[in-house]
Length: 355
Ligand code: COI
Image 1 (cartoon, rainbow, N blue to C red):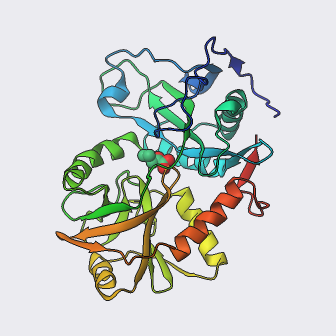
Image 2 (image 1 turned 180 degrees about the vertical axis):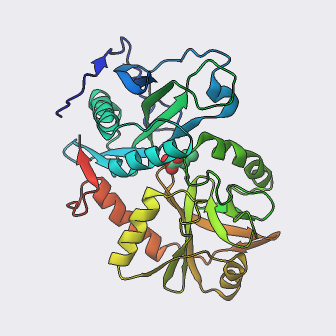
């Protein structure tokens, strides 16, 4: 790997690799040995470095702790059979991080700092990348404000960091979801499209209420009418109704522009499916569940990959999805995606970068 930037590396004296149980990985619990850090001060990103993963020191007046000026990304690296590291659509994550940054008044991170920091980190922690089907290294880049100041204004200093963790599936079985028609995740003109920390904090309480009723996640609806399905808390959602794949469009600015979402749309079109990026009405979903025209419903996301939806609650009534253990479309598209990510087929779309 060639790098052009000065990145100083301080290695851990005590790797945690041996004590990590790769057979029983819990998503986000086992963190790899090192992290990449860059500081923003005096108008530029400086002091690029890799350090052992360790706690941070923050002042209590740190502005992120009070006003939530923080954004993040989620992406994954895989190992192919030859043990090479394959990074999936990292350029798309880098661009999305900067789109979130603009909305949250955070300085953008230049592509070369993002990519070279990430590649150096992956190279150093390459032994943390699982080489089993279904497993990967989850990568969490994030930026947060670091000013020690209580005034409400954009911070003048920030940290950009990346750490990684070996993971299996986020959801281990098909999920149950509840259509949320009271609380709102995102309104037009708001921050819904950004991967902003506060979007997730605001969704926790309504999701907890649904979890207490036995559902895994919510299906959020639009803020104005609560009649249009938008997304789920941890993933975009898609519905196969008859032979048409339907998923919410992103032009309203209320929906995260998922990279898995975009990949599935591209593959579905190549597979000959009609794809409609439009809002599915709650009433339309209810009709499709009643008359059996719904073939499959699933979430898409980096962490979730493809998460089958087994049950949907609408206005207090549970609908089981048709028993389709073969999940004809979603399993096929998942296999296509996995073949690309694990390097089993040649990458004709420029989605893979070798580290
Ligand atoms: C991802 O899929 O990468 C996400 O960021 C979802 C996360 C909140 C688990």
